[in-house]
Image (tube, rainbow, N blue to C red; front, side, top):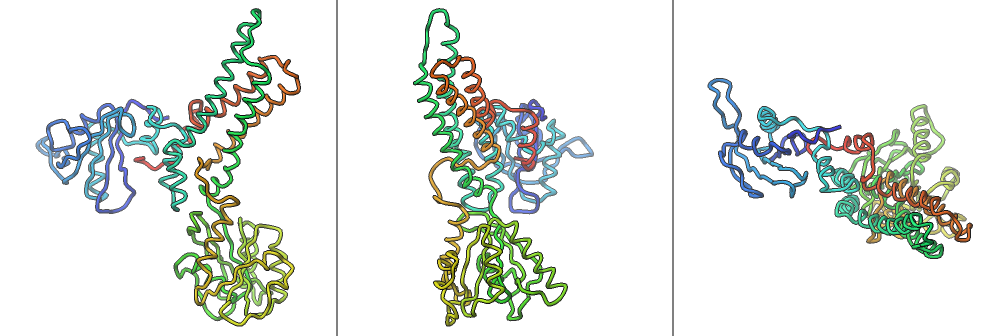
Length: 462
């Protein structure tokens, strides 16, 4: 794992050129490094942006050579991001300049940081817990406002606080049970079976509330896959472009224009959606179209939601009915296009409820498209929409909360079935297992392999 005693350096801004690039230094020798690489000969004032120059040792006379004007800021520990002294140097965003600053810092005694090492030090120094550390990575990776909001809520500690309340209640109950075990001869019982049952029921409700919202949280974090399917020329590619807000797929009056899958990522009501435009499904006319239809069917089979497009200006035919039948078993949404033209059939006459309730839109005029986007977002997010509660978005958290819930359920069942005669040692084992699971969520109890896995997904410099 990382050595927490070294002074580390890395470029903190994304690769490439920009107006400004930031180099970050953290560790016990940060102030010494600052004196070596900056033109200023005095210690930087704390949390004050200081205009100066960055220098490097010259190869000839042993002097120094300035090579950029920078703004340097020193954040003394323990009130910095990592809990150590941190130096941030904002320079011109040329990769050559930023790499030169890094080389100068390494020459002054720092070493190149590993991926996630700055955040790992913040975790080690108690600035953040493991939930918040994972939220940092999620916030960096966020591509929708809803993803950013969920990650920031976790970074602010809302989930940590909720888990902390549950753990505190469990700790209090464990203490009472252990006290009863420690004084068996005196006949002291610090908690009754009825009190244990009531308290475990309350704790179980709090955990179940977190787990119950986890599916929406997972959708927010991981996104959904949506495949647009339908016959040729019903408007699939035009709908694809409308949902993206860009002309990504080719649209022509010629049937069968789309022969392969076209995939893009977009934001629907805050949900990250991997949207796929597919070839028109019909009896294929040649080998190329046959392959396109096969890929369309395959994309529909693995999608979280199939968006079936029907043409309201043309009578339903056998191709439409086959698509309705094949998509009925999974998650499906139906939309009826070309409402600007005379209707050739009435949705009320169709047996499928999803068709009768399908929104009618015109991709030519844009009528109904905004409402469709909203309805799709709500459908993808699930029943209940958004609530102002801590989102459990991480699969690791979901599994550990489930383990805690199962341990509490076992303890509660044992107390009820024993009629209050269950030995405290057996109950204590279940309560301790629940606490261990909760501590794994926040990182108070964890393994090096898990930490390596979590922080290894960070970029260098974060």
